[in-house]
Image 1 (tube, one colour):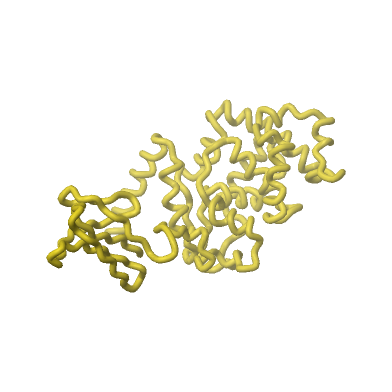
Image 2: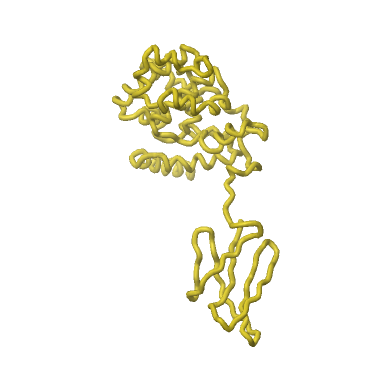
Length: 294
């Protein structure tokens, strides 16, 4: 924790100043009168605001080496992450873990993108997908389902990178077909987000795994969603694909409890829920707390 302390005087042209340096880079300034009597007033400054007393102007005191600023754990290489993220992990993959994976998503285009990526994991790694993310977005029209649903056979077979199809032909056909079915889901439920989140009562599932080996590749809930999607005609949406989608879309929080992102993703839940679903969450949490206290 850092503190900003400042000591100064009401400006007076007859006063002279003296500065004193202390450990931790704290610098104090005393203004002395010609008689040698020092007067001072204290001001406590924070990164957000400066509290002034007696109407005096505050002088910001900062640690040696630069301006004060909080260090985000996302930038801190010493931050404890999930076990599958190591110091040798791809930096882009590490940033994805620190900023996106497990954060609740409610935007339909974003959910469609993450569903496609989860399907692509059968052919590519997360690191490879992330390095080609801009290409995916360009070829799939930023994952706008209404546009992808209109892809013709010629358009589909033109989705190539360096002369090779972006994904296998069956996968590409599944993406286009799923886009058409996603539009039907939007008509029925108002949005693809409403459809997905209704399976968990609009509340993120929070696991408490401590070790990577405990994290499953599929769950009964994933099997339920997979079955429903298949009944609606979706392709390449087996339980493993669906569970990967649930993890990356924040429908389930599978960050290890020792990871600094575990609590952050829990906090992000309220920020992403709309008012209607948030009311349901508050009531549910209150009920759970009551049960736990008994």
